[in-house]
Length: 109
Image (cartoon, rainbow, N blue to C red; front, side, top):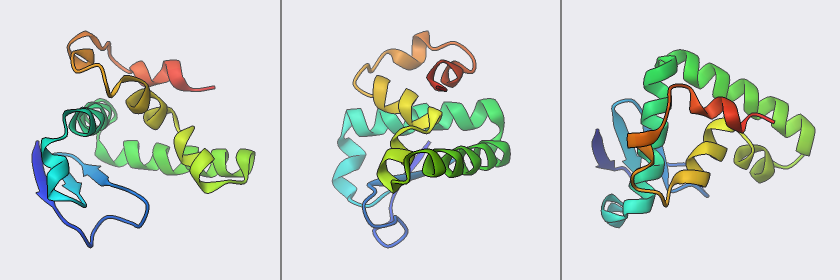
């Protein structure tokens, strides 16, 4: 994992963007935020499992479905299965050691 501060690469309203093997952060201070970094590590694992391109295709399609469902950008984003898994487990710093393959399936609703 490579943590890179890239203030202008991150869209407004977001703190980071993960594209295996890179994690781009808006604020350099977030490189030291264990919870934030764990959230992004969960995304790295998800991307490894699905391979990078299929991950982003699924992410985008699921976002579209959620946006149609909720008609709200933030609600759609927060309800993507990958985000639900990452937000639900970001504070558990040992999560990735116990996480089973394709755990994000548990977060599809």
